Image: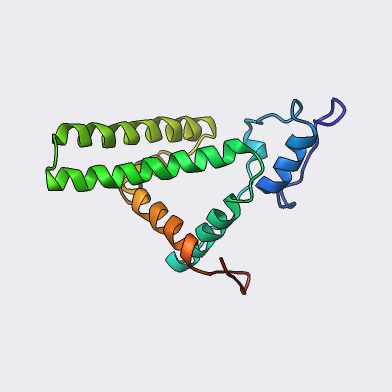
Length: 166
């Protein structure tokens, strides 16, 4: 909102986190979440694993430039929970300690993620087939996101035919 009016940003205009942060810095009490299907911006899906990894490496590299602490905080929590999931899975197979603790840790992460994703899907009238994909994806995502995080610390990535170095 600006001067009591809502700023409308057309879908064709790219809106990223850095633009959001500038709005928030200037008008912290006038920026609000808009829960509306008309506000959803859709993009084309990445068609290859390599492209997806490159995109996520770019996102991870950009996250160190966030000015708002909440974005960094959420990113750290997500990373730590995904690493904890992997550690718990390894612990289940190594039987180092009581496996019940590992199982409960993994179940807690799975349930919290499911509740959040389900609420978003229901709010935006998402198709139930996408929720079914969550079960398989929830097992792969901790490995994928942890891999991307560590790869983004040590590797270059390509975006729009330009190579970015760390």
